[in-house]
Amino acid sequence: MQSSSALPGRQGVLYVAIAATAWGTGGAVAAELYDVGGIGPVSVSFWRFVTGLMVLLTAHLVRRSRRPGTASLRGWFTANSRQAMVTGFGLAVYQTAYFASVQQAGLTVATVVTLGSGPLLVTVGARLMLAERQGAAGTCAVVSGVAGLVMLTTGADANTGPHPLLGIGYALLSAVGYAGVTLLGRASGRRHTGGAFESTVTGFAVGTVCLLPMALLEGLLPGMERAVPTLGLMLYLGAVPTALAYTLFFTGLGAVRAATASVVALVEPLTAAVIGIAVFGERLNAVVLTGTALMLCAVLFLAAGEGPRPAPLPASPHGDPARTGPTAPDPARPAKD
Image 1 (cartoon, one colour):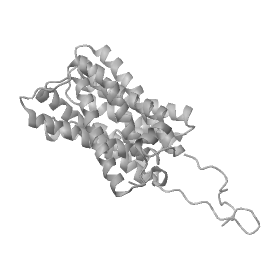
Image 2: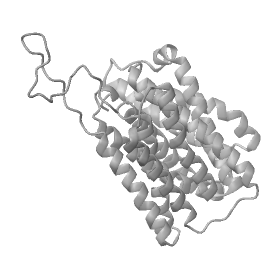
Image 3: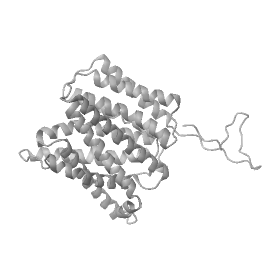
Image 4: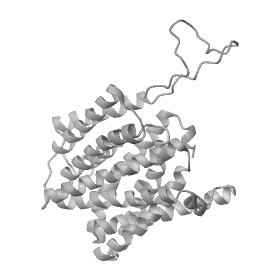
């Protein structure tokens, strides 16, 4: 896969959008696992991590057999242990907290609070920690995306869970974990301290260890009365919305701003809505359609804004930047985000 440092901005947006599309299928698969496998949200997250880690390790072995010079995972972890620890812990927290929020507050509340506050937290964090400015246009895109998410989820028929306030707390915890992972991935991509693939593998290894004790308490093993569909769902959940999606997501973060990535990731609930309509027979209405349009506009607007920037002008023989006219830009001036 192309390194994140050399990835064009629009291709980075595409990678994040593909990752979010894959994540959008994960909720339906997890819901099926609750029914088919008879396990809870922590155990689903644990097996998702384990299966995804196995897929990633297999891919790593294939890479090393074809490219003997491929970096060692142990060496990368030693050099970037703090990043791997924080990434793994953040992944474990935000995924498990989201599933817990769904149980306590219902899917609508969990989705609105988690995915709605995520872009806002990432935007503020990117400004304070990474000095990334969205500008007025980017801020409008964030607001449009969040408003569209609220309309998309509240416009559909939904049931509130048994403990809404507790569920909102879990959702906010999930959003904080998501924002932390996104900001860390963006900072790593800007420093070029390691590959996105290595970050994904080591992060999921740490996350698996973090989830194991809680999964044991909840009930680790799924029921084997329907072993074939259970194993099939686990394999898909680990391979597509986990191994593939997060590798693409962390790769894309090296090429696009953190706030941009968080808004593009709103493709996830759009995908879930399409699945709900196509598979579960959910109905569309004007509010849902308007929310969908707002979210798509936000994603497309930000994708257009991540297009290729003009190359710096060559220096003139006199040592000054070459100018094509009286209004030519100064190449020494940093480009505005």
